[in-house]
Image 1 (cartoon, rainbow over the protein chains, first blue to last red):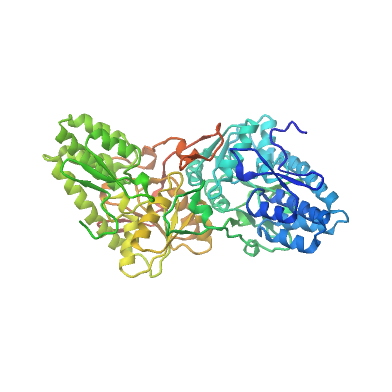
Image 2: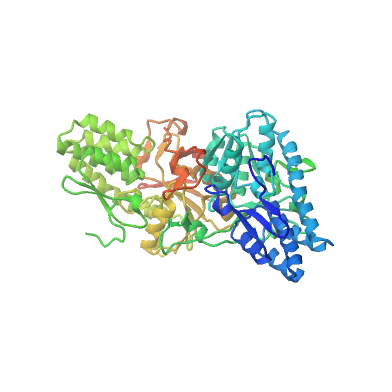
Length: 316
Length: 316
């Protein structure tokens, strides 16, 4: 048991993958137990578990489940990998477990490692921030996007613990509202001051000098440094550059994909139009209206001020 | 009676101001009858009627109601003006009716004039657009924001009638979702192809070359050309400039305020946090989370490619 105000996002419990069901947040903190690869695939596709580093652990634990239940490993791995195409960590976790003699031990190692790397990332990132910093973050790159602690939000947490008194702008992150639902939930539980904004409000806050930096996670970073992340990230990067605001990408080494030369080569997931058309079960648009829903965008490397990894800060 | 698929947004009916209740769209097309200045003020404050040109007519009709009911005119005018501070047309309509010998006749003139000016604006604006144009619009600058026809969306409608086959990107426009609820409703009724997007998706569509221009309305244009409009507009202007996409502001002369030197002098309305925190009656953020909700932002004149008014196209 941990005194952490945020329980582990994903845990291996003797043949059961236990997840925080993120679809139910912020209203209810409930757990989902997956006992089969199909259940893990469903949890990933439905966003019960999401976030690149968390998907790495989920992929590895899915392979470990397949070994336990006697499913053919390669087929299970292929199913897991195909649930979400953009975050490279999912395939990375699947492949790590697949290559291991003991997938279960490897999954546990990945999970423990994740938290430890995130804490290092947090310290490196916090060293970039002044006292009273007002960072803007997008989507959820917190403990819920990882096994624990968080990447971009882990930097905020480290800054908070170091007494820097961060005051966070949380972009709500339509269509799935990960900022409003998940990032605000984490910051509330951690007692870190924050204010929610509509995504379109970021530009005028920057113009007013009220944003000191942008902190985001990443789903995949190409060999040339281009960053795929939640849709809306690229716009923030352009706005940050226009206003002279530093733009930091916080991600573990496992998010860097040397196989992919640049952002144009990263597959961008298209999700269902209903994520845009329906909010909280309520259809907001007319019946005949359709929506376009590309879930990620690509930020060119030249708009990134620095990458923060477990190894330190790499300025461009 | 009109064969227009969109009924008048606001009408004077012998001592009653009849409005489309825009809070109920797109689900229900229902009308709200206001018989007193207070009822008009409530309709404006609650966004039953909104949009700069529509507020001009509402202000004038409010003064006409006060004359009918025998309320002191100056006090009624002050109450009407104070309901919403950013759109200059509201004060303009109030002052026009107040200065007229017959406020009722003046209100009718403003309403009739609005549609006629919007149609001219539409023709001027459509002359800027190529066949198959894919404009991006923000908020609602359509018939519902005016007495009829629309400003930015009136340009789209004129282009559609001219056979240019526009295919519109509709930014949903959080927090109040005027794009999803109102612009999509108008385009559906007019049979104009369109797709809804989350506001954060605009940048990557521009990067992909899928946006040919941005068309927006305005709530107030300062003497130096700075434009106050729905929050999110300024970010789109920065993104449009970054991607070489033309950014057009479509507004009648009554939106230009010679008394205000620049955008910094335009009052920006702050609205309740619940517009961000609660969607369709459902709270999306944690209980202890607060939100910042500045309803408008300012686009500097240098980011505007051209202003389209009833008098023609003014390029900068």
